[in-house]
Image (tube, rainbow, N blue to C red; front, side):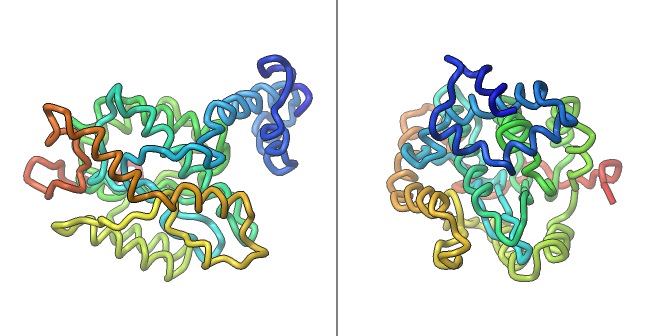
Length: 305
């Protein structure tokens, strides 16, 4: 499968980084995903390798993303599975100026999560907190499609559960647009829940400590000021891991991307300060919830037991 995938790459050769990434565990996901057909597995493996080459500078920590939102690895459960979290209160509309920055942040967070597995875990939970969701801020589907592309090939089978919290009725439009592009396997992993139900779900899968972190951050994002303390791309600190359990690539990526966070956030603010519509396009953490924000809606028809 690896040999066939190499032949599909530009020039018919892998880079050193691409070859090192082709571990038995990683290749097995593509081989099994195509029912043991080497040629079919090679096709999607080559897609993943091409994507990793495109984002090589971000994935290695060589280039720091211009952080756009609060999307990050928030915690790791007792079972060793990372928990990714992002809140629409801190969302920014995707524009020609920042769309690639949004892609870069998603890539950095997903890569960090993939390197944060412990205790035999192989996937992660992803919490999409819809508090502060505004349909007008999410009319550009590019980030959604790019995230699905990342989940489909580069981080194949990396999702354990997608937890969508307090989704308003207008979110259904976004969900309806995404549904046709999701496999039944992926759709079966999606849960539409309230914030209280989300905490209960995380408690059952990841333990009380991780659930307490999620509960605290969601509560802060529902306060007047919001959760303003973000460590990107991950809140899971190096000193929480033993030297034997934390891989050097993971420690290196987290250190490289986190040590200049203040400068990065300042740069992110500068992107918007010259816009004539700053109040519309600035990070939502600076605005207080108001009556124009869409209200939570319970998607009973999409609950999966």
